Length: 271
Image (cartoon, rainbow, N blue to C red; front, side):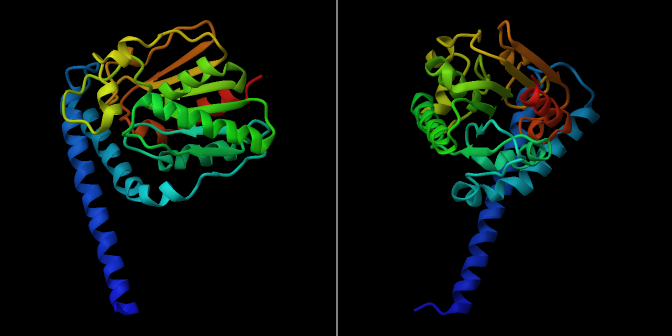
C-alpha cells in the first residue's frame, strides 16, 4: 500500500514528467513550424522572426501544461454581465485553455456569459461539428437564449461555419481567429482523421465553401502564422465579413494579443 508521502512524491514526479514532455514537444513544434513557414509567409527580418518564435514558445511553456486541468475544468469561463452567451471553440490538438486571455478580456468588456466547449479533436471534423452543435444547443437551453455568439480558434472556426450552415437561427455573430479555411500546407506527421482533413489538398478542404452570408463575421489572422498560412487561407468572402490581418504573430500568440481582444470585444458588443 502506498503511503501519503510516497503518493505525494509520485504525484510531483508525474507532474514534472508531464510538464517536461509538453515543453519538449512545444519546442519541437515551434522550431519545425517556423522553419516550414518561411516560404509561405511575407518576408520579414530575422529579428522579427526570432521575437515571434520566442513569444510563441513562452506562451506554450506556461499554457500548454494546463491542458489537463482545462480538459476537466472551466466549462463556464465567467461573465461580464452581457446578455448574449458566447461559446468558445478551440482547434486541433487543443482545448479551452487557449482562451484564458480572451475570456478575461471579454469579461472585462462586459461580454458573456462565456462557455468553452471541449471536443475529441483526433476524430473527424464532421464528428467534432456534431459535438459542438450539441454543446451550443445545451447552452441555449440552459440560458434560455435563442441565439449565441461564437468565438473560435484555428479549426474550431470550421466547426462554427458548419454550425451556422446547419442552424443559422442559433447564431448571432461569429468571430473566427486563424481559421484554416483553405487548409494548411504542413506536410509533416499528423494525429487523427482531423489532421489529415486539415491539409490543403484534402477532400474535406476542397469541398468547403469560401463564402459566408448568414450573419456578421469577424475574421482575424496573422500574416505570419507559423501553422495556418499563407495569409490567403484565412480570408473569407461575404457581404457581412470584417477582416483584420495582423503581422508577426504565431498561431497561439494571436490569442494573447491585446489588439485581437479589443477587436473581438468591439465586434461582439457592436450594434
